[in-house]
Structure formats: structure tokens, C-alpha cells
Length: 309
Image (cartoon, rainbow, N blue to C red; front, side):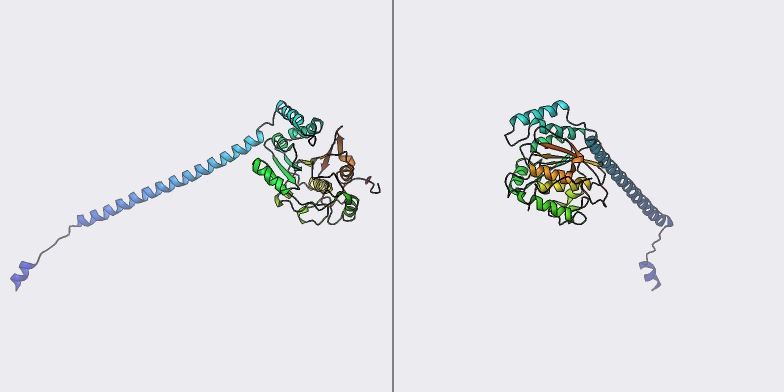
């Protein structure tokens, strides 16, 4: 028995060096993995910061370039006005009427926010003259607004429903006078107003913009049942007085066809004679309207408009 056991038994010896070598290899492997993990994290952090810095720098560069880009030269603007006035139909503006608007757009210290009531033969001209600014058009005809946007993708146009009639001018103005401390205040967000002359169905964003220049050249107003421009003029006057001040305290408001009685009477009532800079020899009224305190309840310093005529 002892011999069998002694013959079949094999003695295996594990030298301590072998165990130490295995532990050492695992340490090296762990150190190797840790090194590359750290290197990967550092690379990721550096790349992320570099991308963020690059994006921020690019955005800043674009904003700076837009702000610092000079307006169109006088020669270019003069040429645009010349060709627009000579190619216009009888419904278009004359050179005398277009030039004051062009001059104001050029004098904007920063890109202008330009609101235009009416899609007219001068639509592309206004977009071009307001170089780098935002020009928004409001029209009564939804199909024509959609057509213009499709034909000229650079045009931003919206349609609005007018519920007024020219024959109702005196009654509408009288209603505003009665509600001047409530729904028809000079300073308010018209989006939440039920004033009969206030346009409250424009895109919400348009009520938050500080408009530098507003042109009223629509809607139609050539017969008693036409919507007339009373609502557009009233809305322009409220938008000008309700500015938050980011774009300056004053708004230039131009009224085309100022020689027509309804347009002139409504302008005198809400844009006010004391704000009239001048009226051209043709058909343009130019008003400069200042921002007002929200507790103001009077459009003009004195009411001189007579509704009896």
C-alpha cells in the first residue's frame, strides 16, 4: 500500500515567483486601462470645450457681423427708389412718398423692425431697403399673402381679418373715446384686447416686438363698405406707445393716402397732430410717436378732431 501510494502521488510545487508575476501583470493591465480611460476623458472634455467655444465664437461673429454690417449705400438706395418709382403702376407710391421712408430706414442705429400694413407694388423694395432688418407685412387677403410668400420666400407676410367699414368711422372713434380707460387704452397688449379698432389676431410674437418703423398702406379704403385703415392706424399707434424701450423710445409711423378724409381724421385722432413731422406734397403723413407710460389714458395732448363733419 505504501508503495502504490508513493508511486501514484505527484507533488506539484508553486513557486512564490509565479504568484507574484500574475499579480504584477494584473497591476500593469489595470494601470494601462486606467491610463487610457483618463486620456479618453481628457480628450472628450477638451473636444467638448473646443466645440462650445467654436460655436459661441461663430454665433458672436455672426451677430457682430450683422450689427456692424453697414446699411445700403446712398447710391444703391437712390437707384432702387428711382427704378421703383418709374416702374410703378398708378397704384404705387411716388418717389416723393418713398424717399422719407427710405431715409428713416437708413438712419436706424441697429437693424430695423419694420411693420407694413398692406402688400403693395413696393413690397420687394421695402424688404430690400431694410437691409439686415426684419420686415413684416400684414394683408387682408390670405391668398395673396400666401402667393407672395411662395413666389418670394424671403417675404414674411401674414393675413388678418378686418371687421370695420369706412362708413362706421365716426362710431368707431366714438367707441374708442368711451373705452380709452379700458379696452381701448393707448398702452396695452392688443392680443388680449376686445377694442373694436384693435387688431388682436396677429401672430403672438408680433405683439412683443419693438417696432422702429410702421407703414400703413392697407387695407383697401375706396368705398363705404371697404374696411378702411382705421384699425391699422389705431393698432400702429398702440404698438408705438407700448414699446418696451429696447429699440428706442420713438417709432416712425407713416400713413399713405393721407389726403383721404378717413385716413387723415383717424391719424389725427390716434397718431396726433403734435406728432406730425410733415406731410409730403403727394399723399404721405409722417408721425413720430413716443413710448408712453402704461397708466396713460390719452392718445393726444388735446382733441382737435371733429366727428360732426
